[in-house]
Image (cartoon, rainbow, N blue to C red; front, side):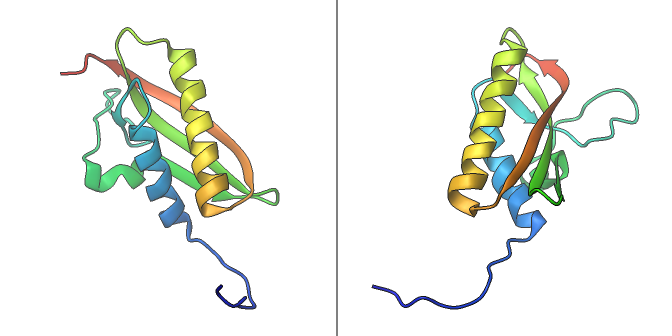
Length: 115
């Protein structure tokens, strides 16, 4: 068995954003992540290397607050996909990162037919 090491573990918000982005893409109905500001009103799907830009992680007194900016697949139930995202992200942060969670918000930036 490993020895206990005294101290505190801090996980950077960027690392959490990477974990959240990857978890989100595994959810059924999610086509991709988008940047929070769609200046021209058209949500552009981010490449896999830039998923972090579609996730905003902030730290509050209660814990970590996550906002996801996603494009979902046409024909899926927006409410169901959003709830699955919240559940998946909550699970990843609680079980793998072991961080207290203040909440998860899903912002659907667009709907797209998956090709």
